[in-house]
Figure 1: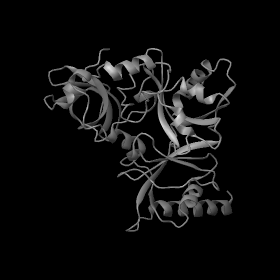
Figure 2: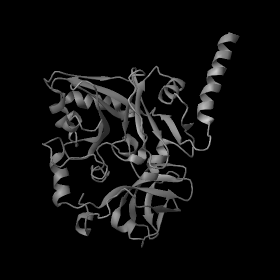
Figure 3: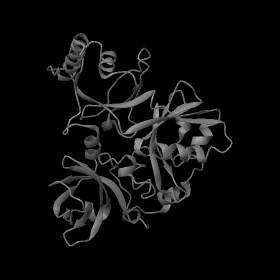
Length: 341
């Protein structure tokens, strides 16, 4: 064993842990977590804007405005209007290049889906998993962090386009280690940083907010974008042109009714194999799609669950559904709350 290298490793480890363990009073505390379950795809070409406009639920042209956002939330739908993939689209310094964040488990299928619609357009679609990796920084309160893009580190920073409570996305070079990222972003050590834990992590943060993400929580071809709260999460535009699955989405929004939505639930016992949410009388009210540390996200029938008249049970144990505080105060009327499958 090379003792010199071993000591160097120990020094780096201690330095890194000091950055995470330093919790002096008066300094804000945040959690920095690498999103290993997410992957970035680069879409590049002269026709990239109309290409993406015809596929996603949101208006990509907003990213090209000088005063526009640095990222948008969007979904890819099938022809029946059901969700295939959720994504965050990031703009870059080049107007012909966008970065799309998706679930790593379906990243190959995601790129294959994009190439299916490329036809004769001169567009390159490639994984940049070996170049950049997404991280998230959150504080558990308002979530957002005021950070500037760091050209020296080649780091791209964007607030989560869905909710401020979901924190700040950081796209960093894959070879950039944790210590380099921390010291580069906070050179004066002005922030307390804690590592993710079972009681404080990005997945749990999402579950407490009731936000589904990825192929396990938003199974491809199973739910509609408005059931997944795309309208409340800034993920769908009703003013842009046509895109795959647009007709049914627009019809539901303008004259349809929505019976089910994703919302947070609180469990009273560990969840077993049965993830169906029921009333005490045995009526099925929805299904849990993700859970951790007594919190989860479930697709539930709005009217029956939120009236307070129903006691909810999952896997034989009591559970509680919660109305997200980021939902609009004036939810659609009862007629729009019943969705016809």
